[in-house]
Amino acid sequence: VNPDTLQYGALGHMIANSETQRKLSILNGKLVAADIQGIKKGIAGTPGEKIGRFVNNDSLGSIEKNTSSGIFGTLSDRDILAETVELQPLPAADINDIETGSATIYTALDGTQVQAFTVEIEKIITSARDGKSMVIRVTDPVLLTRTGGIVQGMSGSPIVQNGKLVGAVTHVFINDPTRGYGIFIQDMLDELS
Image 1 (cartoon, one colour):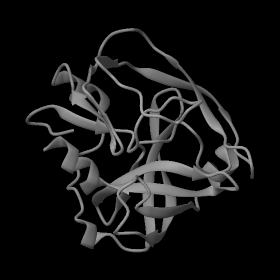
Image 2 (cartoon, one colour):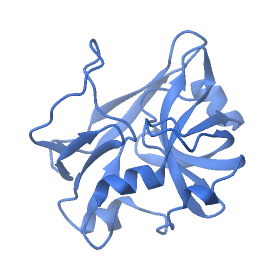
Image 3 (cartoon, one colour):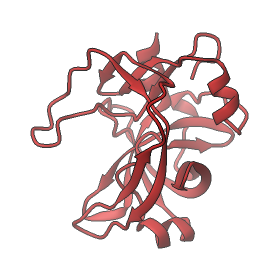
Image 4 (tube, helix red, strand yellow):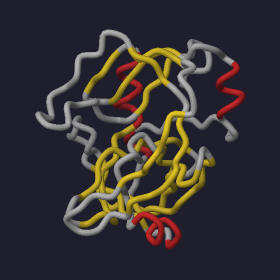
């Protein structure tokens, strides 16, 4: 979220038709609050998923663009930032700041409570512009026990390294749910400008 303009980016990949995998055209859409009711654990060959529900139909913001780098729009109210963000804003990392090694992802597994989990950035793919810029591996024992690794519904979970926002989780490896992809934050920021 740009706190000055309230423009945001989310997901790190486009919203697509589940059957055809083609991009959905979004004429207008809105963000709504959701909470996580359960987890279907991922296993090799079968991706897991977060099971959630919409809290209400109140709009938190608009969805104006659906691109290969995520969905983008504007938050409806500055107070949303104060209500939903418990962490201090982080600087965005330049692609050259990102390195292989330890990092943290933030995601909710119960209700709306966001927690920190450890991951390893195994590979950086600077030429990728398809939401698959980093290969990450979940190392956190709690996350591995609860989810098996990366599950559907974690898209957009921030990846933080050395005090900077480096990207967001985008995809799971179907045959190894402990691993998946992330997008560079810079690719998402480029869509905002």
